Structure formats: C-alpha cells, structure tokens
Image (cartoon, rainbow, N blue to C red; front, side, top):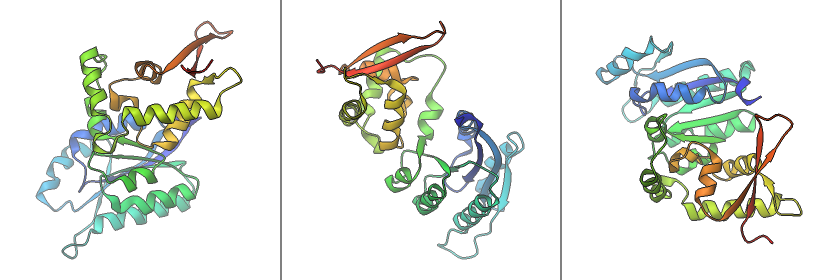
Length: 251
C-alpha cells in the first residue's frame, strides 16, 4: 500500500522556510512513513537560527555543509550524495525532496529510474523541470493555506481563477486532460472509475492537487468543472461507495 512506504525526507534549508515544516511532515504522512529526516545547510550562518529552533521538536537531523567557495552550492552536493547513498542502501521505497531549486531535477529523475517514488515539495517559484521530474509535487504555500474548514463558494471561485498561475495547470487544460482520460479508459457506456482518472491525471500533471483549486477531494473538484457526469455505485459494504465519471457529451 502507498501509505506503507518508507520515505527518506531530504530538506534544502537554503531554499525552504522553517514555517512550512509542520505542513511538510503532515503531507508526507499521507504518502508513507519518514524513516530518514535530514536537513542540509551551513549551520554556522545566522540565517539558520530560525531552523535550529524547530529541529528538535520534529526530530530532524541537521547536516552541516560549509560553503567552501563563493557561488558554489555545497549544500546541494551534500544532499545529492546522501540521496544516492540511501538509494543504494535499499532501505527506503521513496524520497521526498524539499526545495524550490532546479538543481535537484537530475536527482529526482535518477531516483525514479531506480523505481523510487519521488515526492517533491517547494514554493510556487519552483522551476517546471524539477516539478516534472517528480512523481508528485506539492506547493508549500497551498499546504500551508489548507484548513479543516471548507472554502466558501466565493473562495473556491477565487482559487479557480488562480489555476494556471505559477506553473499550475489551468482549469481548461485539466478539463481537456480529463476528457481524454475518460475517452481512453472508459467502458462501452463511457464510464470510468474516478480513482483511475485521478491517478492518470497526476501522471500527466505531477503538481496536480485539488487543494490548489480550493477543494480537498477529487469528486467535488470535477463536479465544479460542469463538464462531466458523476455516478455513485453502492458496494456490498454500506460504508463504501465507488464514484464513476463520464463526459457529458457521451450518449
């Protein structure tokens, strides 16, 4: 199962604020168990003080990396070397790389070539190549903005308008992708299991997350697009209902 994954969490302290740490670890818990939790930076620098205050609370191991020369990012090199060491130890099922730096694009691609699940996390300024190299990518600003209370219709509409900015796919692009997935995967009557649509959509857009658009679940998000029929199918378990989707123009 996906939630049984052992995940190595590697954080680039030079590119991530400590204010996101709770949201980072909460999100990782949705994908597996963090077995390594390491953060990389030059801890002799004064700007790292804010990070030092949270490391003990979250049991994160700081890895010291001095900046030997100006203009060279030794922190990136240390993280990459550790990632490869962990990969060859065969002790994890996946990696979470937390950075907004495109320098980790090749690392993410290499880890996936070895069959690893790669979850990326970074701010919306993260370059598209790094996002595309990850199996899934989460925006830190979105994770930090999500609350237990559902968005109001006005808030949802505002979030819809944000779609397509900062590298996120627009609603129209997602509609086209979903319609194509349904056409390719549906049965003779045009229906396809909602979960399958979600998985294939994530493969096409690694940064796709319904929370980017103001929804916590896939079904309400797709319903808001107004282009699809949604059908609920009961199972032998009264607590389990499967959702299916069909393009509205399907006859």
